[in-house]
Length: 309
Length: 323
Image 1 (cartoon, one colour):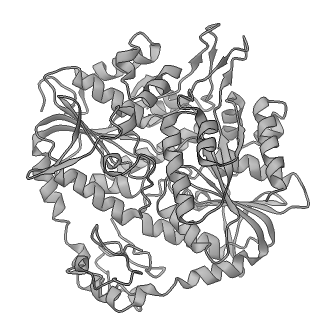
Image 2 (tube, helix red, strand yellow):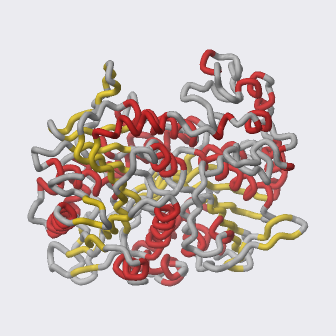
Image 3 (cartoon, one colour):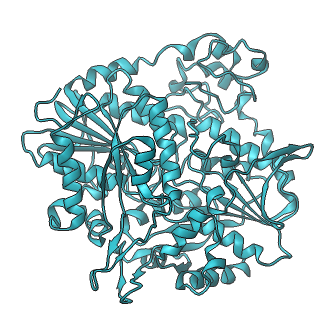
């Protein structure tokens, strides 16, 4: 990985040229890199592999774009999977700067406790646990102003030190992008393995452009893609029932992108003001408004994939 | 600000701390000798270089949000077009969203390339008086992913600020990704010599957004960045058929209006949803120019014009006479 004060053309501290390339001249890390010290694999990876041995399925929820409904989908997926009382489900929120999961799952103000076996996650239901940096803040408005390395350290702790217990599903909610959080989750779970990623988008090309980058990321790190969910896919006026494409799919939306990239389109979820309202209130939209077209689409998506998971 | 290496022990004091390399926690850390040598504590010489470069830039404005997808890039582009509609003003947009650079598409500059000359990198021009720089111009294809950790992103941002040949500018608008992390800290740090006029904060009405936006506001307060005001996007949708208004993202806790009252910040405006905004962004056209009669356009123009002729917090911002 790139040390924190490295130059732009740093070969990377685990590269064969670490400490010896032309770019290394004058770098404060040169002697450390040349000594071979950073090349050893992070011992945490093995620790995490052991910890994750009791977790049957690990699913990442990703998007290159912000604000498309990753956390909303993660929470709804978790509630849906946990509606089967025989399943143990957990959500890990690795959005360190903008942790939305505590609010969306009605867990604001909850605190994390430490015991001999690690950190205890916070339970929504008996069989639904959550961990987020949001639980470590004094107030929900406190900002976490951290650079990449400190965020990586937190993610390592979440994966290594949380006492998840036996889990059928661990859903990992992520921030937008292809940076520290994403690389760290994939790296730290490289021993344990990830079943795959669900990619979230909205219909417009500005979103799809970022989402294609996320798909490239998955391909580069060899992360299987379970499929793509298109949120905000049309709005039906509650008064006259006219459908408006508020975020117009000017280039064919997720459907066209999935055809082009040979990826499964899991579903297209329409806009529904009750989604945002329930998120704000920390309630499960699927439980509160089961008859909404958006709920029905979510349930179809989840049921079709539960067999695949 | 403390820098904690990713291989640092749990109680790392931070590489810029007085105890860097010498505290009890440093024993055994691979960076111990580097930190003890004092190497990371010296101020980055780039800050002075950037200060000199920015001497020809009258006003620098950051567009921020803790939340993604609220319309930061959309606002940045519209603001730039509006300011550049005055042909006597020189305007530029710097896109520091390294992983998800939207500005090239939104401003119709996809496929453009950056050129280097003796005086640095040349930005890409939308109009004679409107320039843009983005990592998007450095990619082989718009779908290429930039999979970089923080330090490499920071290096790119430093180059953008130090090496781009902006020339004389009246306004430099800096579009950012969501969050309070590397990009935001780096922009503030690298411009610490040059100064930033202030930040425009973008949100949408729902509490899940406001919660992240309050964190961004805390960030601004911590780094002493003045806040010009808050813009609430996606503030209602008028059905084109029956004209009924729906709050698609309901302001369950009072929206930006309540937040601004609570935090004593100016609410610059509430921009309604309009499908033509997204359409024009996708097509790289200026929504303000294409659909000037839309309520959203009128709100944007009101926001921008109100800040063009008034003082704000002792900063002469968007003023015709400059500072």
